[in-house]
Length: 193
Image 1: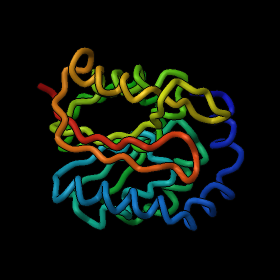
Image 2: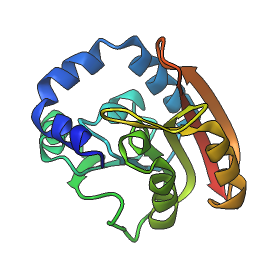
Image 3: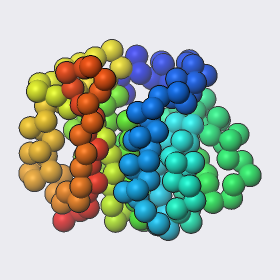
Image 4: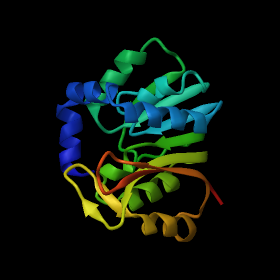
């Protein structure tokens, strides 16, 4: 993870959660992902933060398990959902931890972009986590750009990775402009070939 992003998650949880609660784009993305997920048995949310997707999915699942490397985020998530038996959270590094569980859907939203190499982050997710479908996002642009908390990858890299490296079939995608920036958020739903 980019060190500045890790520091932000560890030290600014309250300001981040307030910011996220008032971001219209977060709600739009959550609604879109919830529609893509549909009614399922099990969901793994990698980089779950405070568990916003547990709420966004509105009970569309029989079991939701959130995984995150940031202790304050997991503590906040557990405090929010401690009375909801079908929702649980674990403090783990999602890129080195592998469970022997099969999920209907694995989510990794707004996580790859905070890694030094977003393409490798997606590849690791596909290697370590067993699922029928994967829904993830990354920042894309015309060229690679390293921001303070994020990494933007060229759109051509993502298109080539689908076919050549990841061994997945694209089910659907959506590209969303990030405010007035010169890059976009790419959301993809894929399945292994």
